[in-house]
Length: 375
Picture 1: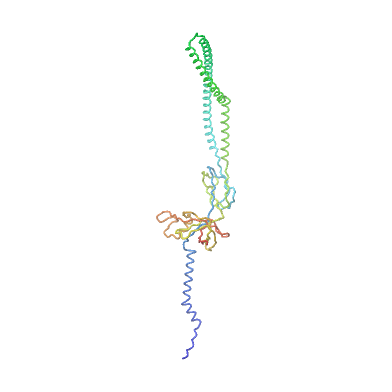
Picture 2: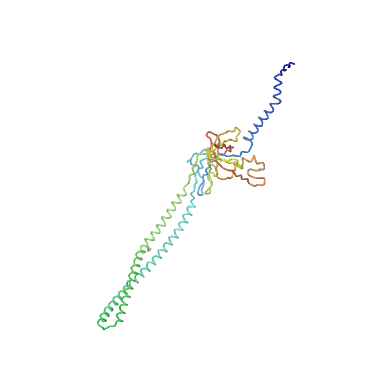
């Protein structure tokens, strides 16, 4: 029996079959892929996140003063070495008070020095008196020594002739030796006292020495006054980096406490990204790893950088990055705060990433990162 020929189906029938059976499956798969990509790139929280490092320099003064000649305005571009403002430190009343206190201290020192000089005078006169007394004693003992020597020689001759006793001979020998020892000790004592007197003689107060003390006090006060005036000269604060004025804390004419920022200058160009690997640490960066950098702007830009430094321990995520993560924390009612008012601190592993050339990202911008491990 012959098979009947196949009845041809019109193209519209095939199209209806494809549209009703195949096309929904393809559309579902494409929508699923698009949803996954949107979640990964735009919606889902990133495990690795970072922000372009902000370089800021605070201009401060080390002493209290007054702001004079503020030469910049907020957001103005400045260059390294450019004068920003002048801090006037000179205060006439304070200078007078300082000099008065120094003069009082030096006057006290002068009185003490004069008192010491008078004490030196008394000691010097006492030493001179002791020296003269010892000289008189020395001359007396020398006379006694000569007498003892003469008596000893006379007794010795009489003893040889048999006219005197051995007891008398020994007595005068002892007297001679005793006076000889006393003369030797007194000569040494007189010599030492004489050297001491000559040594302290230049230190004895006189009108010239008191005049020298007064001149020294006057010169010291003058030098201190010059030093205070030099220290109180206006200080010019200059920009330490190229950038722009991001904050002004004091206006011209306002008093500035010591060690308080007057102006903050922020750099306009960034060289690296401060990134964090959030917990759990599913991936650990290593120096040399490639990093995909994605911006969070509407026209998302993608670039590739390199890990240049990795931290050794977990560190708190910066406040700006914590704020950017609030969208993924439904229990958070206020930035950085839980409903019961407790602050939130998330710890993550920090590392630095280089910024690719010609990628227009600015300091402080939050970016999403994807680590690509090196082979």
